[in-house]
Image: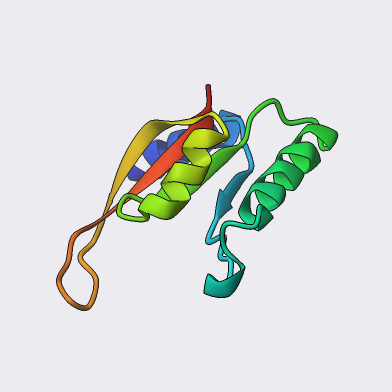
Length: 101
């Protein structure tokens, strides 16, 4: 019965559509606010469309307010909150998944 449940879960996961997402975007401190982050996201959006995807997600740490401000300006909204295990400092982390409205 356990193998059957695992097979059913794997089949259900295989039927879920896959979508690209952006994570871990970084711009050097001295190069920020020059439009580089915007250019990277816009290029990722173009690439996703060229590959046939109709949406793109962004994964960002909830506390990364600078990045969130950029993504907000680009029209992204929170669609999912992911709780992460505490890090080595025992701080609870939360990741946001964003999607263009």
